[in-house]
Amino acid sequence: MGNKTSIHVNRHSSLWEGLGVLLLLLLFAVSCSEQEDVEADDYANWQERNDAYIADIAKRCQRVKSFTKDQQTEGDVSDYVYYEVLETGEGTDSPYYTDTVRISYRGRIIPTASYPEGLVFDQTYTGTFSWQTTGVVTTVASGFVDGFTTILQHMHRGDRWRVYIPYQLGYNKTSKDGIPAICSNLIFDIALVDFSHPDHNLPQWSARQTE
Image 1 (cartoon, rainbow, N blue to C red):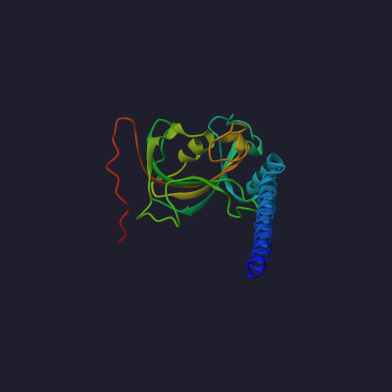
Image 2 (cartoon, rainbow, N blue to C red):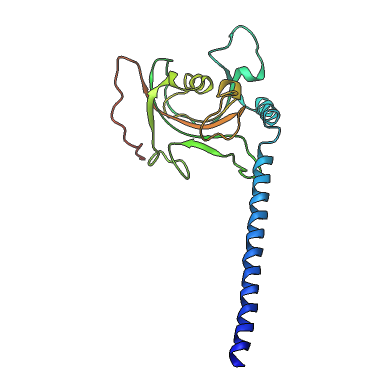
């Protein structure tokens, strides 16, 4: 008699455990579905949102015209690269198209619900920027998208700018690893550490020392 009661209780216990597992699976499925919906909404009407974003930036930021555009005409909003000065360096020289540049950067796309500061797709440093700890890239100035190369040719050593590149001067409608949608404006924080002409070599990199 006692054994039968024990078996009856165990069967009910197993039933409740099974229902609990099923409920957890259902909740997990709903959660995943909601997350997918949020991510999908992040990039809804993406091209139009990027067009509107850069049009707003154009009203309040300084600009330089892309070197690939006709410099004699006024041009569209998408013909320009826009920037804000975060730090001002020294000197008046800027890199040429064929020069070697040493830079630090962080690249993002425009803000979305999931990424209010913009999804970071590439960077040479993490956390807050610091001249003492940042990583760098050393390469030819012409080795980037049009908008990035354009802005480098206007910066000076020690400058750190926030740069807004219309997608037409970035990857346009071409897919790029790390960027989840085409027609994405690019937002870069760029620090120009140093540069040199083709007949000179840059000195070995060491982080900037404070006084």
